[in-house]
Length: 263
Image (spheres, helix red, strand yellow):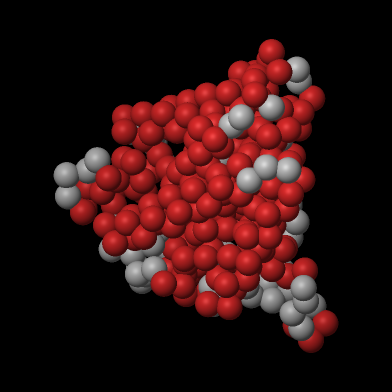
């Protein structure tokens, strides 16, 4: 997410904001779907949990369609769909962040973070996180395909909603996506993101008639927020890569929690 440019607002009648603008902005930032920019300048943070949940719904299809005996295949397909829908932006941020953290000094860390090539530490981070995701999903599918699908929806909403919730309180750099997003996300928008995340978590738990998805979402959101705060302080301000890494770590933590709590 490091080199993303915020979507430019499109011209509209009198530039009046509408309820659809946060959704359009969030979809523009979080997905590779060509939805177009919003009518007014906004980060769309308040809609992050909703867009995340929508991504999870699509990614969960293989988990419901394929039989339980094909759990590993279904898990990999679900992760592939999710990566395709968001353009693998968060995975890229995870890899760049891992390479930066392994650098011996701040200057080297910045070079590693902005280098388009994936280094050794970035590759290891990708393999480990995706392996955790796939393993946890396969375990969930073997226990309950419906629970696995709900866990994906809750986890996708948790990672994205959490970073939006904490954004206004992060230390910021002078420029870059992280600075733009942190400065442009109001406390009201962050609060709405938190409310949206809670609603999504409760909804999926109600549908599944189990508290597991809600508890998993809470665990994922906590890990995502904690990781983002630590990375922002370590890197001298929030970066787009840190946001992406936090999303992926939150998603993995959510799936882990769901797998550990499965019936």
